[in-house]
Length: 130
Image (cartoon, rainbow, N blue to C red):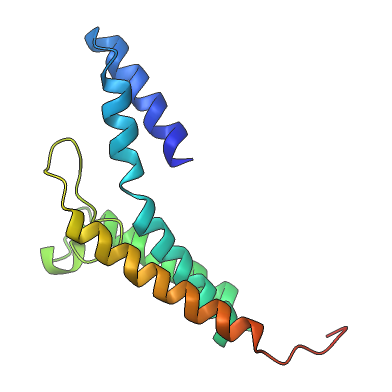
């Protein structure tokens, strides 16, 4: 979905500016949000692995908090809160410069959450028919 959204935005912007290269610029910019999305999904994997009964509610709650923080300016939240979510930590390309360190840190944390969650999930004692 990130790639489709980036391609559509790039094609629309490129068509309006008569610059077809914008398709590739915005497609690449949209892909930088992949580590943040994986980190958000990794939180859900951890919740399913450790608290399966409450995982659905807690997953939606964490997603809701992220959405509220992303729109933090509307709620007059402090900048320290607004700039500390997986999605707002991602550089806003092409307006900002690419920070590979930020993306690698997000990807590393996401990988760790997924690995711990999947390892825990495979070791859970699941009763058949439960």
